[in-house]
Figure 1 (spheres, rainbow over the protein chains, first blue to last red):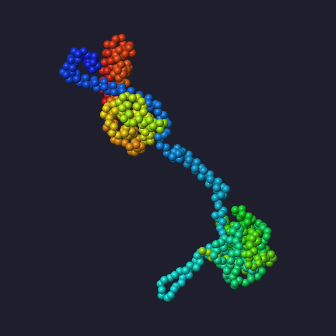
Figure 2 (tube, each protein chain N blue to C red):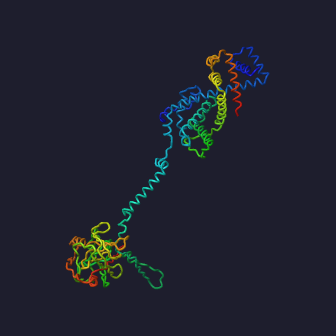
Figure 3 (cartoon, chains in turn orange, purple):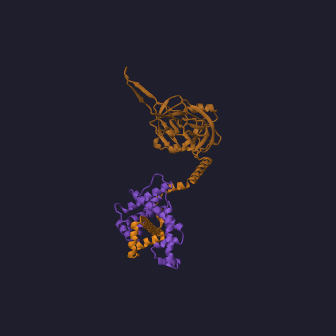
Length: 362
Length: 189
């Protein structure tokens, strides 16, 4: 019996198209011939697998049909976990962003350097009152043979500036920043005598202040040799100042550099007169002995550039003093007694009217 | 879209009954209900939408055969079952592609389903062999085999379709084809 015949028998046996006689014969054959029996099993398994395969293909095509109805793209957007936009942006464009940032930083720096904006004028504008760091510690030893020592701080901080007389009866001009927040103010003349003074008027916008000596030991100064100039000084004019950057009076000379300071503030002159902390509040005189300004500050970045408040603003400040603040008359000297004198003779006279302003504050 | 699908999510017993009764509607609802969950799993674990489709369909087939096989016991949520099967299949696929970084971002709870997948992949191998045997068989044998054994068409229909003059010739041709198909199938390793 050929394979084909056997296969036919098997199929006919299972699809029920065999006659009863044939069925009996075939069953007998299966029983007696193991080879036939195994062929039957194999055939059934194979056809079963083939049918299952067919079912699988059919199921897959059904699933594909269903799948094609789903809008996978929209769904994908929905279920994807997106990183924050800035993270995505960085991932996608970080090289471009880096280049752009570098160019921007470079550009900004270039512009700043070219326009000089990096030179912050204000930060280099240093006011010239001097902070004295000498803190005097008075140590009192109590009793003899005792070990306990009790230090006592007398003055927590001590500032120094310069002031100059406006009248013979004890009105002085100085910088506001010198006496700002002062607890008490003393002035000391060229002879080393100290007098208590009080602040009677301040004009913080011009950085000017008016003091009055109210010490019983104070005696009349005698006529003031200089006067306050009412007009502006000229460029290149020779100038000098006297002040107390150190414990002794210091003379400094130079010229008027500009009628406005670096910040284009026209209330101040730019001058080339060497001054130091402690000169603040000192008088700035021209060669004829007119006070044309009050020393205020210096430029920290450019050596030898300093500033002085114009005398016209000092005059305005004096006019602004309320009359009830004045216990004595404040009559400004209008007569200049220095014109024609040499600079040494001038400074010899002026120095008696220039005071060291000592400020005590917490 | 997601919301609509969730709103019409069929219950688990509806699905089991529907599959047993060959309901196309239930199959479709089952498919559309859980596909987004699997798309999310695959997309966010180094796969694309085509991977998601493959993995998901495989899992649906596993579930389908299990229900049809009659040995399906509902001892977990269908959702969890489908997720677990897909997760397992995807991990397997990732490690085959050497794309598995040792970490998977999970979105649902999952159960161990190794056995299901073992028997499923055994059967897949058999089907793969059958497919390539049929390809090698060539026409007209392939169509005759499919028509007779898969689509259960009668020899009469097959005769007419292929223009055989008598049924005996067609029958002989069919047995020759079957013989060759078996040979091709068992030759493969």
